[in-house]
Image: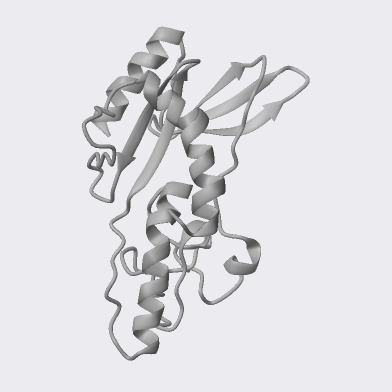
Amino acid sequence: MKEFAQVLEGVARRYGITVHLQSEATAVDADRRTVTVVDHGNEDAETTLDYDVMHMVPPQSAPDWVKKTSLADPASPAGYVEIDKHTTQHTRNPNVFALGDAGSSPNSKTGAAIRKQAPVGVTNPLDVMAGRPPSASYGGYASCPLTTSRHSMLLAEFDYSMTPTPTIPVIDTLKERKDMWYLKRYGLPTMYWQAMLRGLA
């Protein structure tokens, strides 16, 4: 998303970070401290990079016990439960609903996303059990709090249309902000542990 990409490109320049887009780490040589990176945006060209410290994140996927069932999306190697992205209802089994890390909806798998999916995941099964069509819809809301310095953060909020969808009135969240860093440091943990996990937010 250009609105957030422009800010993050500036952050990368400020720190002297070289960003490798559309790339995938395919091999690590721990003895030589090198990583092989394939650039999928450039005919799968391979590059070997040196590293001092490496933090790697594996590709996201559904748990194996989900992947092995007929509920999984057969076209997806990630094995997510195949659902309608708005209703969270399974595309082939109308009595099955899935959301969060197990559902195939193309949103970020974040706490902010599940917070908006959860009411849909309650309302629609109740509708189906009552003989009604699903009435609730999830628009793909996700929120990614991106720490950009020791005292600033960019709060990227967006939906399926890849349109910024800020939820905090008055504040311009399309730029790095110190108050957003305080939100991440103090507000979001409190919201998560004291409200979201208790079904209060």
